[in-house]
Image (tube, rainbow, N blue to C red; front, top):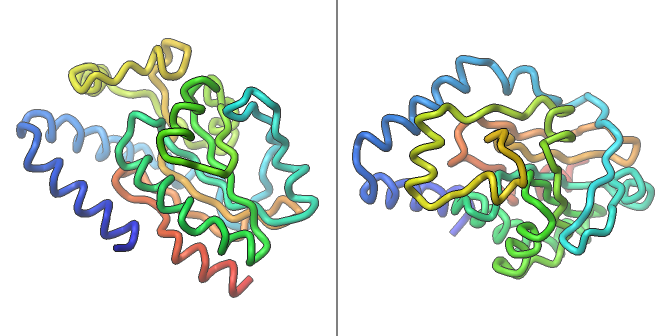
Length: 214
């Protein structure tokens, strides 16, 4: 089953699991994000990426620019290990990692979680690629991907047992929208997938097609 199909299945299961009031709050949040035109202002194909150096799950600083010296980079921004859609995405990307490498690309994921929480995410999903911690969403802000959760959605998340203050190590309640990029060795973005709806993610098969053709 493709990642896109897995995400649709998960969304259908969620629709049956939670009350209509919860879905209304979550859908309103997505609609407001779309209305804000955030995705239109995000970095896209043709743009150059900023300097990126972030700690990995072992708290070691990783430079994307250094990785680009030898290979392209597939870079994905995800919300956190508490997000089931993010976990599906990370697991799917892991399954394609060897193909990315064979096509000359290194896979890297970024979230606003602290290194300790990134380590938990990495271990939970058996990830062998770098998972970096973007504390306070500094890099995600440079990509224009960051939004602040509305108060009613914060309460919904708390009801789910999601503690963003603990997860991210701050009280901002800010997250990146779902975004995946392919970055050429000169730092230019050659592929982008940016969606306000957290249930939609770049399918690894589409990334493979792009890498084969570029």
